[in-house]
Length: 385
Ligand SMILES: NC(=O)c1ccc[n+]([C@@H]2O[C@H](COP(=O)([O-])OP(=O)(O)OC[C@H]3O[C@@H](n4cnc5c(N)ncnc54)[C@H](O)[C@@H]3O)[C@@H](O)[C@H]2O)c1
Image 1 (cartoon, rainbow, N blue to C red):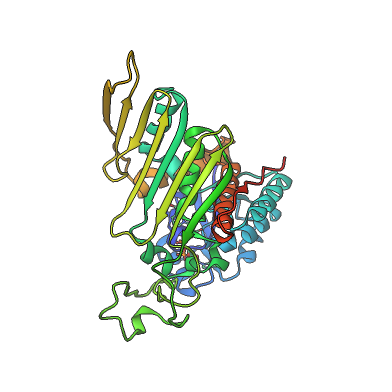
Image 2 (tube, rainbow, N blue to C red):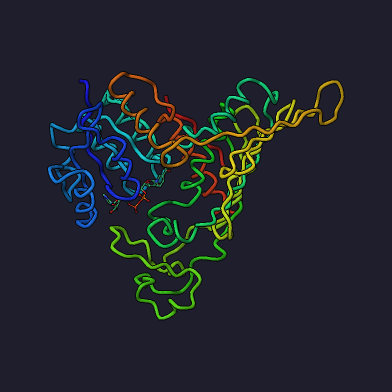
């Protein structure tokens, strides 16, 4: 095979990754799309071409012999079913993060993958961003000694816009937001340190979003739309991104703090809040010989301080500027798409592996369980071999 023919499930939103795969004279081409929305499929045909096959039933896409690989870019609660069905149909699979909304679901996906003999990759695009690759290089080179403590704070300043106006806000669809943005952050800590979480304790609550508005209320039709600070007008979108953020069904924490012990004893403190006015994603790694921090992923600056040479003083601060590459998510999206094709055609191991996908979900689920159960300490279920 010298070209991968791709079918996309969930064709708008994250399904936009298709643009990086659709190169009919190159190594990959998009031949099919499945979605539950006819509007989404119409927009997909406008982007990819009128000859692309489209269907409202994902199994029809999986039944096609001209589809070699499937990209599952639909909401989180669909991943397990679609990925397992894709492996049963003999397809290679790209699955967006979070891998699934339960740890047991991830384990079923891993089993289906192993049984199929096909290839599998998770959409952890942060692993492909220059800023975090540099941070990993600094840690791997031992520049800050042995990492002992990690601190991550994530101000998800678009929390209402991204997570509470649609399906993410209900736990039956997402389990909780420690599996959303946090699945990237947990994975970054796993990847940069080279160690997975083994014990978690969490604190969190739903303090700002949620409320007593009807579940079917949408911003466009709301009487309070002229005064509501969370009002969001949505036009001609395939998904329902303007449900009221104060509706009854919203039940996922809008602020969460988890403490995680990694398998080599590293301690991680992680905080995410969804109603901050600003956006910030800040990682600090403290090692036996220094400290590494990204000031902000917008400014792309790294500070490294060695606090020990001959004496315990700050001897050197280094600020390193890291330029993002061109393309979505700081240049990561084209690289993610390429890694998937290299994996399918050349057998190259991708940066974002399914095992990493499972471990990130397992830590997020454990943290969510702890938050909802009196902050009990939860052991992360180990991987079954
Ligand atoms: N890696 C990243 O940076 C990144 C960024 C955003 C989203 N994501 C992930 O991508 C996935 C999709 O997120 P999104 O924000 O694009 O979602 P979305 O709500 O915009 O939906 C994406 C598409 O899936 C379709 N869809 C909805 N329900 C479906 C179903 N049951 N079966 C098939 N298609 C269905 C929608 O109509 C839409 O076209 C999620 O798992 C999310 O976590 C990853």
